Image (tube, rainbow over the protein chains, first blue to last red):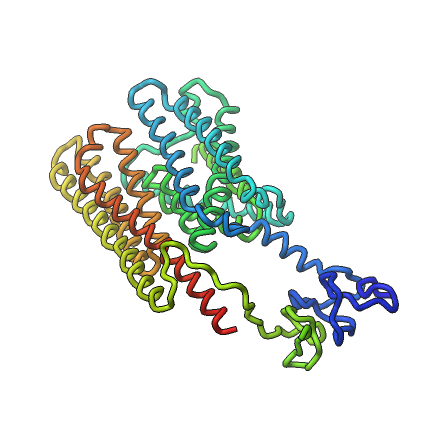
Length: 277
Length: 187
């Protein structure tokens, strides 16, 4: 007996559980929502279930209300993060703090701000945090991180030698301030991977998708990510990383592969510095 | 009628099904005759009014192109001027080259945003505003005295970009509403 059709003598049931109207009774050979070939052993279409889960975690408004003030949310968070960076620069310029301490100050302030914004937009961002993505996304993210790191390293080296500017070396900056490896890993790898991803691929991308559509939202959030790093010399590789992260976020439906990609990218940068490359 | 017939194999399917359960081919979409979307306070209620309003909003959003290209040209001119004035100086010559390259890069970005704004004004205006305000903020953080210089021009550009963003948002809302009423009319 096919469970989907219920007991003998019952009204035949539709694939979504509702009673089927008269004339629709033959066992289906294809799912009527996604068209995939139907296995008689199924009680529900696994393809539709997976698509529903991905749709729930995709960026964009779930209700009309959630689409009403998306731009303001995205822009306010961006300008708040810009404000902390500006304060950090002022503290260094005024010699109130040294560079690594200012960096830590900005990192802590950004963490607080992003978590506050996340609290206010949690219902919208929650699906992306609840979705863990297929296991294949994680090694793919790590591989993409290797590619983006290689491109960034080549480009930055070329620009530094051409323009004869001083290259920023994260490890040296923190060691000079008396900080150790734990601080370097935390402030260069862990904190940006978690907080920047929640900010740009979580709150901002989701808010922009409501106003611009997903494709334009990925482009705009990547450009905002690039600009906030405040390094014109590194703009092209930052844009590339932002676009790759946005693509991973949209296709995987989860923030975790993005965090892995960001962590591995920054980790490789630190490793390259250790190796003197 | 609570069933729909597949045009490929003539099998009966439940109303609302997207694919035929027997042959697997896509069924023709049925436009839903949902309630007519009520126009917002700022949006015209008639088709003719909406068309005129859409054109006006599109023109206003297109002001972003002018603002962005103007900023790009100003950046380029500023970079060239500083380079020409300081390139002969032994100490400042290298800095002048870096300043020129950065300003040329910014000019290229602004002009590219201006071109993008011709086709898609809303995202281009958002990015243009973000970039412009970021540069002003960072310059002010490094040298607070520069905040006041050219303040009128800065305010005009920020105002123009903000207006373009507002017009772009209204235009998209109006387009979405015109699309919905068009679909309801055809059903």
